[in-house]
Length: 183
Image (cartoon, rainbow, N blue to C red; front, top):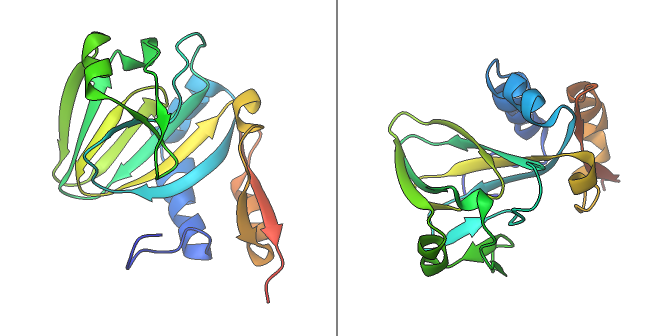
């Protein structure tokens, strides 16, 4: 959680995810068309960094993981078009993402595309697409097909949120979570 932010493992945090992603009239149908069925397995905030990252780097497969990024006003983001088609030799970064070098991105023939979200907004990207955040914040959600999601460590939430989580799930979207007793 970032300073002054809503904790994700809270009723308001779950409501944010439900309203801005799971019930969004553009994002939800897009997720279902790309993955058919999926599991939400990551929900975190990302801020500016001097590095380029990917969440996954396996060009040998079809899309398995989709990232939904909800941007704060004034955010600046560069993604590398075509990077999802190349093995980028990533290394694990301190923030638990996969870091890739700018030299590797350039030698792969990938093209940087800069985007500014003056009023905020959202992006839906293949998790193999390299990106850099230069300003602002992205609240980031990862949705994976069953084979990918079963390898993820479940998000841990208080048991008091179990009913809310269950109400957010559907035939096409599950949430990869375990519950801890409070107290």
